[in-house]
Image (cartoon, rainbow, N blue to C red; front, side, top):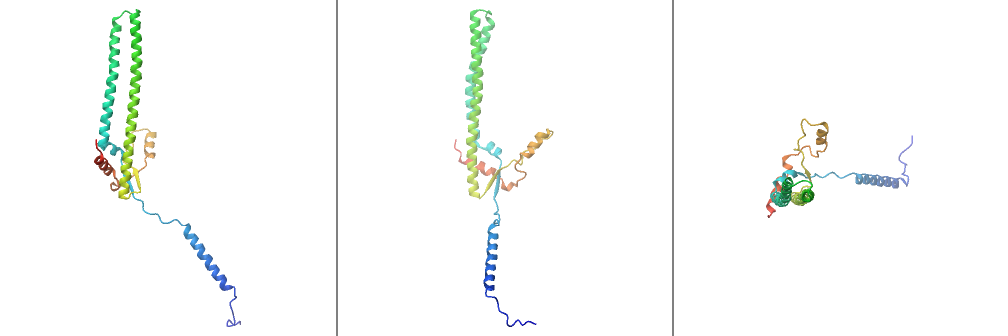
Length: 207
């Protein structure tokens, strides 16, 4: 039977043990550094952009100015239309084929072209004006949302379309589109900041 009293450690063994321990520590450190840190809670809020727009005093004033502009342009267009009516009445009293009748027909055709061109231009101008108005107002809404979020600590603000109704008795494509294009299925009332945005913007607005 071998005696253990005379055994001695090989001189390299302590060095190897230290090296193994160092490698094990390094492997553990590398593994820990590769792991993702725990996710921090994200503060989320929602807004109903349609309700915001409909509740803004500024929008009502802008719509009123746009309507005034439309009325002014429409009145000018109506003057051309009245001239057309007068020419039509004159043509009925004239003898067809005469030089005077031909000139009056030519005048009527020119006025009809003017009326059509001005009418199309009016619609396009009003559409562009409304688009610019909506864009400017949207930028103001976005700024208000950002300021409220910075103040209240919200990380993300989502457009709330959870109240949009899926149409009944509609074609499959319309129902399917209404479902798959929805971005928010549910939100608690406590995360909605729509009223805060409206209140802030209306309080800051000066006509």
